[in-house]
Image (cartoon, rainbow, N blue to C red):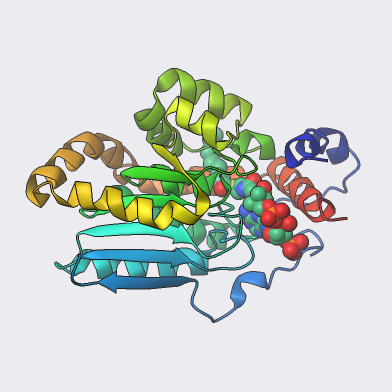
Length: 297
Ligand SMILES: CCCCCCCC/C=C\C/C=C/C(=O)SCCNC(=O)CCNC(=O)[C@H](O)C(C)(C)COP(=O)(O)OP(=O)(O)OC[C@H]1O[C@@H](n2cnc3c(N)ncnc32)[C@H](O)[C@@H]1OP(=O)(O)O
């Protein structure tokens, strides 16, 4: 059964699930240790001659955005941002078939409100740093990229996706019974327009590469083995533009969206915590996690 079809079963499944109290962790059925490995989740290669860095996401199995991952990502990004010699950043995945599976669902399931707040602050930080980056940012999407993974790609200046029909990309939050926050929605609308975003978000649409190119969610498709060379070629074109003019233009386009979150950060964290710790939402997340597990059997 496809994940999308399986997700439709969530509603009928949820009636069979046991209830648990607000803020109380249900029995741990899932491995909560997976992302606690101490090996680096991000590998950065910087070429001082070209001024371009390649960030490889290497957090098995699916580069899910855990608190540890996001912290490492932001530290890496900050270091590159402070290095005046670094003008461009390509983000890609070292994991087979997946760019990023989006937010780590285990960070949102059975966690205390304090921990959820800390996690959400890190998600905001990743978006603020990447969307507001002075560097030229290119996502080399060499695998599926749902929800938060799609957000990460949308936050870059340019998106190249591997032309592999089984890969999908989109903000599919509603399929999990959750809602894409306003700044996820704004980032998508800034890229593909209001109408496409409205429909995609309500239906939780996951696009294959050709559909994603058609709606403008990605800018270019290439065979998977050419993704880094295509990203490097595009980067060369962007590097030819004087930095200050490009950076001011980028800031002019993105500042109103960034300001909207910056001036509502605390309220946004509170909204997230209130929403995600609701019994009904925890129940949906649990059912979704079970579906992900069952997919294998
Ligand atoms: C009133 C308004 C209030 C607003 C409040 C805002 C609330 C909004 C909150 C949050 C927004 C949410 C954003 C998100 O990003 S949620 C995450 C969404 N992600 C997904 O739906 C992706 C799910 N995963 C997949 O579809 C697939 O795993 C895949 C296509 C990425 C890869 O497929 P495949 O290679 O076949 O791998 P498996 O499915 O077998 O997975 C391997 C392994 O990884 C686990 N896993 C997958 N995704 C996640 C994840 N996102 N988080 C944690 N773990 C994940 C999966 O369970 C398997 O685990 P294993 O069995 O232990 O190996």
